[in-house]
Image 1 (spheres, rainbow, N blue to C red):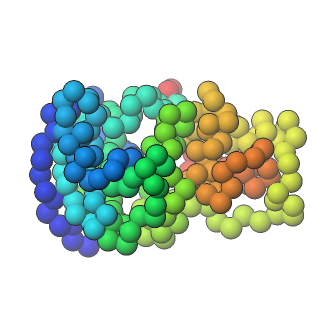
Image 2 (image 1 turned 120 degrees about the horizontal axis):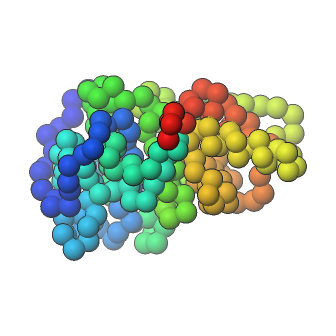
Amino acid sequence: MTVPAPLDRASPNRDARDGPVDMVVIHYTGMTSATAAIERLCDPEARVSAHYVIEEDGALHRLVPEEARAWHAGVSMWGGRALLNDCSIGIELVNPGHEWGYRDFPEGQMRSLEDLLGDILKRRSIAPERVLGHADIAPRRKEDPGERFDWPRLARAGLAVWPEAASERDPGRLLDMEGVTALGRAMTEVGYDLEDFAAALTAFRRRFRPDALDGVPVMRDYLIAREMAARYPAAVEGA
């Protein structure tokens, strides 16, 4: 695996970190072009940035050095920990997003992402379960990278996680109140902030059930959440 030399363009939107890096957050740009997105991420008045931007053809841009804190996560929470800019590297994938014509992420872009992620995780000893989407950590505000993003591909490469094919009779059965409570408990153990349960469930489904974003909680949601909580609990002790 060889990561091509990134094109450097320094964003002023950065400051010093307060701790070690143990997370990667994947975003989409949600703008009409790569140029527009990079300009915004480098605009001091916008007060947003990311460490890397990957264009649809795979071209890689570095805007903030990994040692500095980029301003990409915003108001965020995972595993009971907030202020995730402190501990994360932000990667923006050029994609118009849900507002401007959401589309699949091309092969060249995904290959470049795999190379970059593989390098980051190896250098920094970051576990695959700590590769998250923006919607995972900010479900009330964000949708990205969205239901078209290929999380199973990253999982097959050891760069993210994905549930095994949990099967049980009647996985579409509606959950009663006790079941919903158990689902919420499992989602919390996975890492989700449940201040807005409906938003968290939608984010969870964007990640793990992209073909079923809407509807009331069902057994399939619980089976996946239970499995992921058992395999990859994210609660931060003392958070």
